[in-house]
Image 1: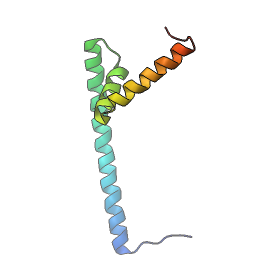
Image 2: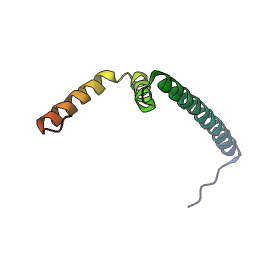
Image 3: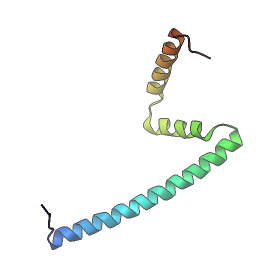
Image 4: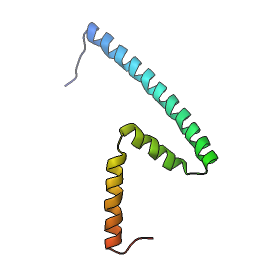
Length: 85
């Protein structure tokens, strides 16, 4: 079954598609800039960019406490099976 849209619906669809494309482009641009900045700062601080990006994601989600609990459980599991460094 093919859906047809009336004139008003077509206008709304066109508007949301155009706005959505613009937002997606802006997101890509911002993410690219953030990636470049993270790489530069990580190199300056001599840390891995992935670690810095993870810290940013955790700070954004305010999930450090949960991440710490997960890490502690992971450490306990690995210690239990004798697979620690």
